[in-house]
Image 1: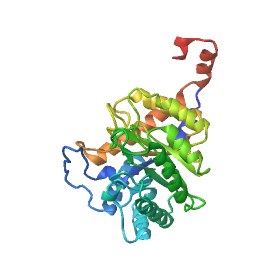
Image 2: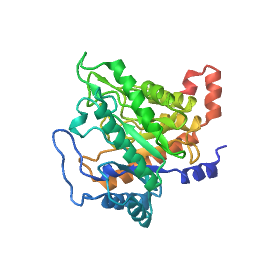
Image 3: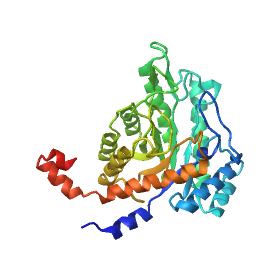
Length: 333
């Protein structure tokens, strides 16, 4: 018999971090559509995120993106967040909007460019100390567009060296989380294109280096729940960026495109011990509301994750295992 009290208690503890950039204007390479009331400052983004938490009670933290959310006083920004009922969360680095990074950042052949990218991450770590953030999330646009353009093996070596330098700087209670994406903006090869590359790189660093899984960063048809199960088996799943897509990295509202897939992912998360405040696996949205209103879009997204979490918690694992052990294909499905 299902213990509904246990499920409701677990759901009450669920936390889904919001990205500050979800509240700003965004779009495609064709057009960015502005909307009335779009935040102009980090403070205004936090105030909008606080509205989502007000109505969902599930989003107590706001992730920052540096330099998009750069301020002079991070302690004051943290106090502003507290006054609005939320806290500052993950710090996301940015090495994809500087001309020096045209041919790479942490993987660049020029040591001066690599050092510039490393120094940016040092700045992010300093910000983490000021905000009390646990996670430094790194997503790299590094890659090449044509065969022969770069030494793909040498770039991995340089990436490993750069990451090791950054990892050595994080605090004892902090983590480095490396996100992967199979293509875009690079089209021939991306330096961190898949979970295996991210896993190989973070495993060489240490226990506090983990993998971030963005649900939209996979080729169509990828069995994402299998990747979730593997990373949990290996103890290297650090965080999720939840969104949904129809084609590539669409960054649409989570659960909009394939709600059954979201359920399957969350079932493996729960089964593998990745759910709950002590699991070490952080849940975050990473979405761009290009044509819909941003605060309502986030308010819809958060319960979508919780609803599929509830369904996964309600799944009868014992009955499923019995069907699997008996070879009952239809019963298991």
